Picture 1 (tube, each protein chain N blue to C red):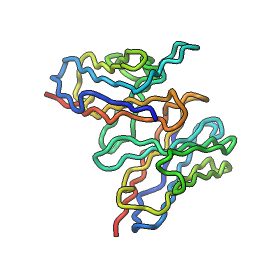
Picture 2: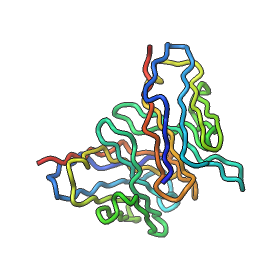
Picture 3: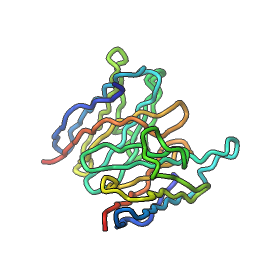
Length: 120
Length: 114
């Protein structure tokens, strides 16, 4: 079954970091870029970052530059997104999403999301 | 960054009636070299991840009912649900993938039953 499975909910205090995982199965992990998109409560979808599991190339929305780190473990088909210096407005559901095809940045396969709550 | 603006923000339509959602981009999403519009539509239900409905402005994904259709070109796009069903209640988002990152979404349109 083609899917991406994310890690479970997290609670962090302001200033801390969180690391969310995204494990792919049912397809060749290195053939499709993984993207990270978040949705704060009552808000819309916000694209955050991408990583190419084959090359390791990555890119980030300017809003998250300096706070976001994307890593991978290709041996277990898993991508990770770490967000640091958390603030209350980082409380959101974080999704990983597969890019549909090389060069075409729409997203055909989504994880179920990871709720990250930032609260003191 | 390309700004995507949807209208209306919310919409109430009777079952069996047509629902129309608009999406406008701050610059053209049409690549002249291939005549493709780099615009996708997603459906988002509470507690579920977004579901890709349409890519290239008008190409329906496999398994998406044919009551969903996309149209438009350049900067103005439309998602139409020809005959609303109860299971179509959701928030709908457009997304541009024309430019280098960020790949921006519209603010969403909430579709409800009248």
